[in-house]
Every structure is written in C-alpha cells, then in structure tokens.
Image 1: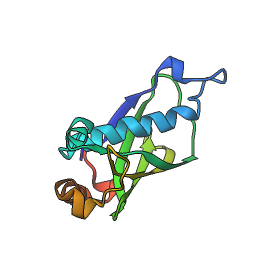
Image 2: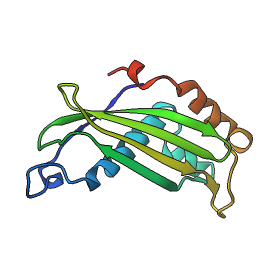
Image 3: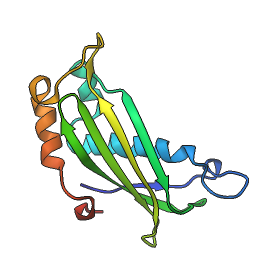
Length: 142
C-alpha cells in the first residue's frame, strides 16, 4: 500500500502555530478514503453496492506537534476485520520520521435501510480485499 501524504495547510494551524487537534481526524478520513481506493473499493463502489459505513468510534494520541507546510505521512492498516465491524489504525509521521499521532477508527457497515451487514457474508469481495491488504504498517511503501 502506498502511504498517504498530507501537506499541512495554513488554515489547519491555530494561534500557537501548530495544527489544531481536530484536523487529525479529517486526515484520517482522507487516508482511509485513499486506502479504500487503493484496494479497489472506493466509496463510489461501496455506494453502488448499497453500502454505507458510519464511523462508530475514533481515538487519537497526539505525540508531537505538526506545523504549516510540513508533509505528514499517514500509514493505514487494518487492526481488526470481522463480523460487521472494521477497526483501522493510523500512524502519522513527519518528513524526519518523527511520530506525530497514533490513531484508530472503528466502522460498521449497513445497507441503505440501516440494517447491519456482515462483511464476510454480505460483502465477500470487500472482505477479501480487506484481508489481502492486511500487512504490518511498517511494510507499507511510499
């Protein structure tokens, strides 16, 4: 998997000159959308299959600050994939390799009527793509 790159915009910083904490969750979504596209299951394809995927939990541990114009690398990895839930881990580093943030998000999958879907049973192609993408974060390629 190619690691997602985000360049910090000026508007993402606060009065102290560092990135406001809320932006990391937005970057997680950017990286997750990119990851899904890389495995061949972008949101358009999920929606074409009648699937919606709400976020049910998010957690971030901020390790170091990031600043305007820095390039942040966001490695995405599957932490757990089973049943109706998907847990994703994100590792964010700057160009010097300094750990900026470790984060996780948890998602469920439902049809457009709000019924929970079981990944393996109801979305076997998507489930297989997720399984095949499961590699340690450190082995992701730029």
